[in-house]
Length: 349
Image (tube, rainbow, N blue to C red; front, top):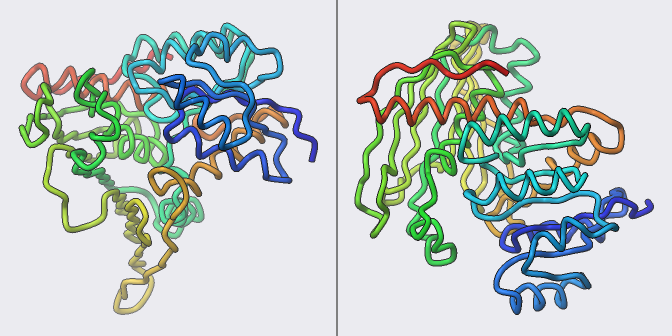
């Protein structure tokens, strides 16, 4: 297949996981430029991967004529600027989670995408885990009936990755957006747009020098009237169970899925129609690809994004879908700052 869609990558941590595209025969994508810091590291990455254009100035990257798509893997707080500048340079954009760390920025991006007629997607890996996809299929096929209640979690002792990404404490990273986006987006995927949020947060002081809340409980009511809850905890000692979890309680069955970096994942289901209601289990091989063991999920969302560009389709997580999650996280912070007051989720979009 002709390699006629050029990609520029901002951020060479997880961003280097995209180099596989250059050797993928059934993809039109080709990585043609890398941007990151420091410049010496970027140049070294270019030499190792065969990418000729390397820079520490993202403006140079987004203005290259042979680059059609910008993939953003920069630290969270830089996402909005990188996205907006790339869109204004007439580039399609995919950004790793979180979309952004401010609702106003998310709305600006949504409007700009519509104005420019470009493709935009959020690379939220949870929607592309085989375990999570399996229970989504069950719900869509009617096996679980109507959703009664759902819950999701993402728990991670982040002390293990902070030495590699010290900006998480130095800036600091906002774990509400950078962490809770995973379980919240999973619930948006299954349940749609939220209506109300109640949230609580604490700073565990487990992460040395981290100045704000790092552990959160979020209660959600959706437009459908359905309810859900989220646990996001990042200032913790490593938990003795899976990092990610999603459980759907339906009128015909209950299903749960899990995921942990570099470990096998599972999906389990109990169906009301099966006598004695046995727990049926599906096992999935570990994703051993990529910087964080999520390379296979990345490949799936890149296929989705390429299809959107080539065939003028809507990406699974487009700008509007991304705003739904950011609106929830913004409301959760407002609730925390007001002692757990119930807050309406912004929905004027």
